[in-house]
Length: 178
Image 1: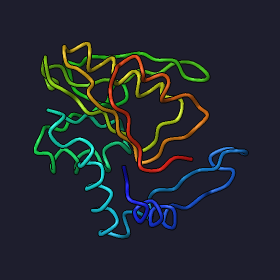
Image 2 (image 1 turned 90 degrees about the horizontal axis):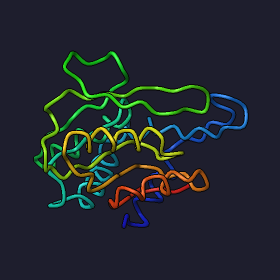
Image 3 (image 1 turned 30 degrees about the horizontal axis):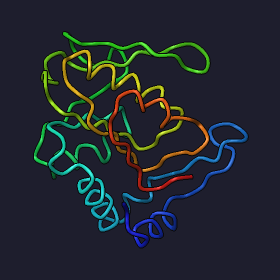
């Protein structure tokens, strides 16, 4: 569980941008975190504490999942695996298609980078509806690994993302909740 001090510092740092990218959306701009190296370091320490000793690899979802995910993997001394949009990684790849509000999308990872039997943390900056994260978890399972944990900087209530992830029987963690 994050400290109240960390939560307060993040809430004072993250900027709320109304009506972006479309009217009615309250965008949470996390980029000011990267202007404060100590705050970034404290966020990583909190996320690492959640996963220490529980995972063998970290997968980050393109692209904001890389911002914290790589540092988490380095601190845990485990491999970091990229999960990217279709067509961004060289073959051979493993793919997973998922539905969006309008249409569908595909994410991929390089074949063989996730090992059978590994316990995997899937990290992204934000959990909303959970569609992309669910697809990432299916990619992990296709390779014989287990999703042990999901972590996020922010979890959005009311969009049922966490509910969608329950089928993986993995721990779910976020520092902030809106």
